[in-house]
Structure formats: C-alpha cells, structure tokens
Image (tube, rainbow, N blue to C red):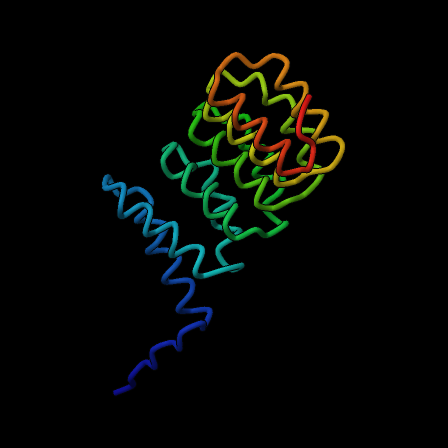
Length: 173
C-alpha cells in the first residue's frame, strides 16, 4: 500500500490546495469568513496574485471587493493593470478597494487614472482616491487633489483631500 506524503508548508501543492479553499470561502455568506479568506490569500503571497486578478471578474461583487483588497495588501506590481480596470466596476465597494489598492502599490502611473475618479458618484470612493493620491504623492497627485478640492462639496471628502495634500507636504489649494 502506497501512502501519499503530505505537502510541506510552502509547497506548491499545499499552496494550490489552500488557494482553492480560500477562493471558495470568498463566496461565503458570512462577512467574517470572507475577510479571513482574504487575509489567507495575502498570507499565501505572490502565488495568490494571479488567482486574485482572475477573481476581479467574478459575478459576486463581494468576491471582487475582497480580491481587490488582497491585491492591494499584496502590493505586487503585477496587479496594477487589474486594479486600474477595477476602477470601472459597477459596484462602488469594488471601485473603493481598487483605488485603495493602487495607493498601496504606490505606482505613480495610477495618478492619471485616479485623478478623474474625483467625479465618482460615491463619496467613499472619492475619499479612497484622495488617500491614494496622497500616498502616491508627486506634483501630478497634488494637481489632481487641488482639482478635486475645487469641485468637492462633501465635508468628509474635502477633509480627506486636505489630509492627502498635507501628507504630500502641500497644505493648501
């Protein structure tokens, strides 16, 4: 009788099995289970990036939201294009998390795509965009934040924009 040897932690077979279990848990109706699954994907590391990118096309917005969150926390440049594409998601939660993820990546190319998001219908998306621009920094981010400040009427978003400008070292419009 042949006995199979269990994979060692970090072994590709173990990661693949864990990855499949975590992906399945992202569809769980319980928010806590979905959050734990997302953190599990982050713990797997780079090996989880392609799966998370693919999950941004899932039919369930909650799965897309958690996939975008994981990609941001993984901070892998391979996720850049997928997170940029997720800025166009129909669900505001996904756009919010995609904007946040781009800030965590810190790629200055994202400024060009984040700037126009100042017109997003959802104030939490606009706040996330402001924070990400503040994290990325640079002159283009300052210009985008100033433009956002001029047209922003919501106090909470205005506060996020001003904080982002302070984070960059630019205190005012």
